Length: 242
Image (cartoon, rainbow, N blue to C red):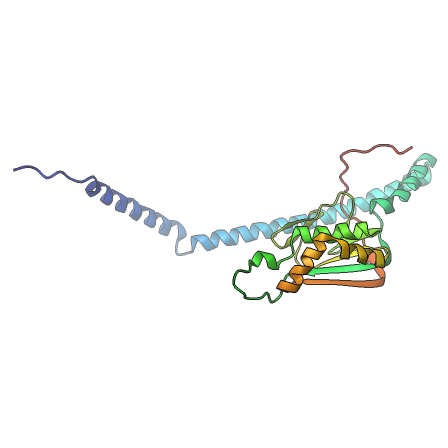
């Protein structure tokens, strides 16, 4: 009588089951009655909060040191004529560099995600939020219309500032902001409004406003204020103007 050949599965299945049992037992021992996934999430949230707190403390330290440097610079300028002259020349460059607060008439343009987007089929939820290209279109149009100074969400925009978005959050000058985004521009209101109307990117955004319920609001004011740039400017190259 011929002997029956044993299938490889008759050996593999018990081995796999034994391995799975060992893994379950190990997980139960390590977890000790807790949820392994949620504990990891709690640890990550704590890590993020700790990093945010550390950044806040570092910013406070930077502010104190900056105040000490300014005081020492003023003292040196009062005691040395050459240093004083250099300080006066540097003071004249603070306004164009964005290092001084400015106030005056201008526009505030507010953009926000759709609060109640239509439920029609085929609408991509990604189209119902403010994107980087939308903010960039508004900023570029305001500069083209004669803006003299600008801020977004209360943060000064200077020549080295980059408007970047991740999802529907804005990354600007090392900080993260959520919508709504208020863009404040000092300058002639009528030319800036005209530049906004001419901008292809702004027109495209306004079409989404009409179709999907996003927010676009332009307001004039005679008394707007933009703060100074409060981070350390990073200059990769420079040349002497003669």
